[in-house]
Amino acid sequence: MSDNDEKDGPEGHGPSGSGGPEGPEEHGAHDEHEAGEHGRSEHGEEDIHGGRQPPPPGSPWYVVLRYHARPSIALGIVLVATLGALMSYRAAIAEQESARSEHLAAQQEIQRESALSTDNQLVDQDLRVFGRLQEHLLLARELRRQAANTGGAQGRSLDVQAQQEVALARAEQTFLQGAGLNATGDLPTYGARLARQQAIASDQDLERLVPRELAADAKKIHLRSVRMIGLAAMFIVALFFLTLAEANVGGLRRGFVVVGLVVGAVAVVGGGLV
Image (cartoon, rainbow, N blue to C red; front, side, top):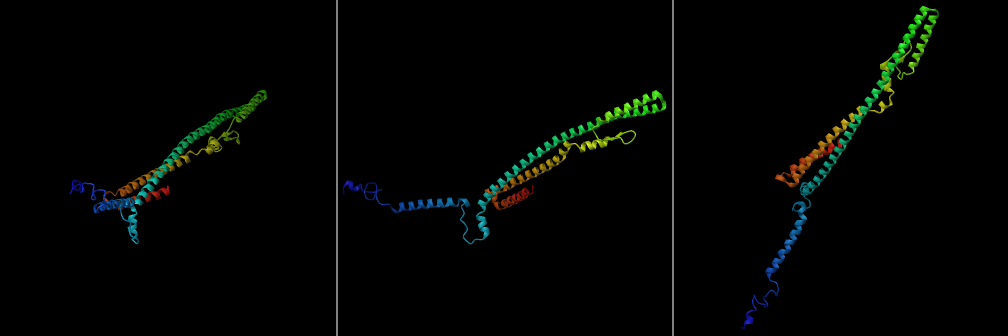
């Protein structure tokens, strides 16, 4: 045997070298690699259900429900978060509407007070005019009495003065703007209370001003916004328990799911009532 023949061993380039056919060990390694790839593929498909195998056909309903519970919890979290955001938005809109109604009520209250002050000023002005009118009529009555007692030229002069006083009283009467004058008797009177009532009733500006109604509406809307904020807080509580159920903290998933669903259902029912 030559030196070249001795080199045709495991470390040489002979038939038993690396260029020859694969041995049983290499076939086993290849099979293990394919099995690992197949296992990872199946694991990726099962991650949506937490790596659990689906229940066999014909399983009870609660088994199927338990299998689909985890993706349902995630969907519930999304739904509750959306409803909570919507309720918060409605509460903000209601609060803005309440503030707007309250501001408008305050403005109309100021306008109403101004209109009432104007009506009262008109009545006060009528009272001053009526005072001058009454003075002229009283003076005319006194002049007539003196004219009747005096007689002659002086009596006729006093009667002319009385007629002038009556004419001045009639001139003053034209400045009256209210409806409180009562001239049925010998000496006219003026009803200030009746004049104020009629002035307020005939004021068109006061008819369109409803500050009390606006204030009541603002209060109702504010209370509704407060209830909406409370319902939004309930959605947050439901979201908290569903998040705990998704994280499976302490193995109490079922209890967290029940509490989250109950609180969320109450918030949904309450949201439909406000």
